Amino acid sequence: MTRSQPRGARGTVGHAYSALNLRLALASFGLVTMVLFAVLAARADLPWLAVACGVLAVVAVVDLVVIQRRRAARRREEPGARHSLFE
Image (cartoon, rainbow, N blue to C red; front, side):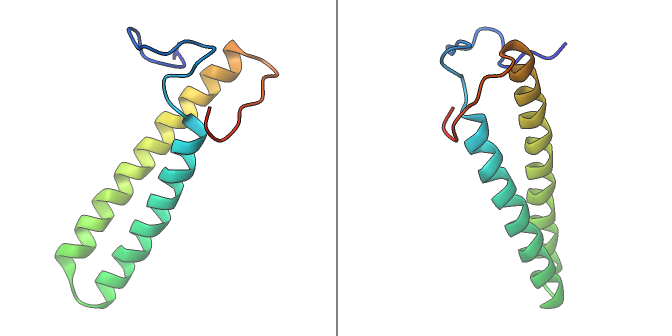
């Protein structure tokens, strides 16, 4: 079972370890940006830059998966609670 935050973290359920909604927004922006830059770099015949941007896009996807798993765990721990962008 996935916990909403790692063991030993300084946060609590009342005060989150990480602003998951903000991380979700930033990771989504990073994914879109890196995919766009990878396509533009590939069209500009810069394969090394396209690969670098592609790797960063994959990192953003992994971060999105981790964030969604933690948000789901938080929803299980706090059913019906609404969280702002910074919680």
